[in-house]
Image (tube, rainbow, N blue to C red; front, side):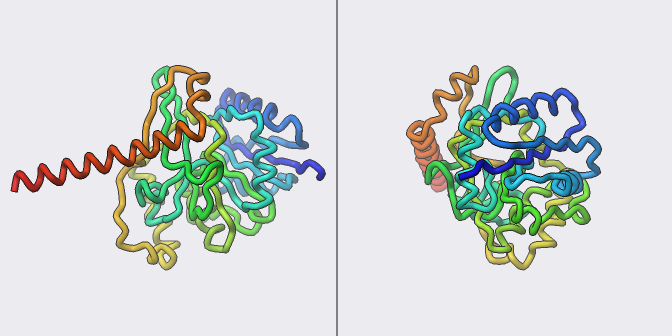
Length: 279
């Protein structure tokens, strides 16, 4: 089978971040024909990604933030193989979208594992890694890195009119693809460090409201589901990349996720008993 061509599209106004992330992809995709397209004056991420998509020639597309580090040397082969069965892949997401935040459905419906650089160490957020290595039946994914078949990206596109800033472009893109019948998945076995945890501020809420208005009819199917305010999941702190990689194994991650669920159940029971006592 001929090796596919990859196009990596990165919107960045930071020359150092762009150079470092580009070098990472150059190494990861060394065995594949590839191009890296930098958009350095994007009016929004949707607008920038649309422009990068128009310039690209790859069969497989990667829409990437400029502050991530992927630590899996098998990244290229894995994505090549998986995009034969999936239309769109990410690293965290939900199998039940209830509003403009992918994590709002809570533990049972959020999936993936992502590490974040923080205060000289690495924090790992574990949402759910079963089934391994790819969780299917995903409805929407986080946009730190999205990998798609070219035709899927062209058919879906990014809504630069509604999402004319830097929030919700990813949820809209992925949820629109899911609504169109595309198959989405979350990769759990590719170690990745993200230098940002995101900003869920008033600006984010403004665009989350736009998202809900646009997709109200589809979201109505999950209306009334309980929601959470912040991403949940088992956390872990690691002092180095080596320590992180040692822990990024299916048995360790799955045991940690199970222990987290049991802890929350016990905590919930204790809280309920305390409330009954105080009545």
